[in-house]
Amino acid sequence: MQCFETALPLGGDIHIQKNGDTWELKGNGPRIVMEKELWDSLHTPHSNFTHSPAQVQFALLPSVLARADRALSLTLQDETICASF
Image (tube, rainbow, N blue to C red):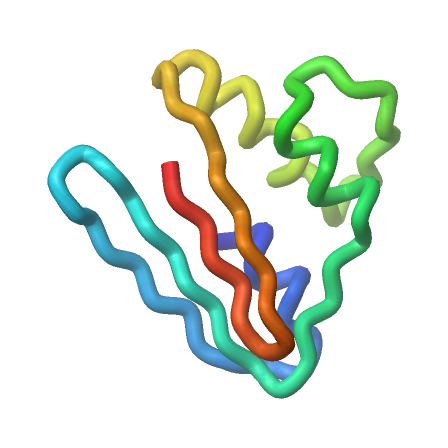
């Protein structure tokens, strides 16, 4: 959810739902901003990307998902970002 907050600089809504064992997050807002290298770092637990203190959630999430044996799926549309794991 904290990662989604960074993608919605003009505000918006974040919806969280659990379907069986799968968590689904959907964020909607007037403008989605996704720094490609930052979001790509979510798929690589030990990437060389240097995170700022404001991006610590991106640094921690890959190892948390790995420990939970979960894979992250991300999709982006004009005003919507979706993630599931």
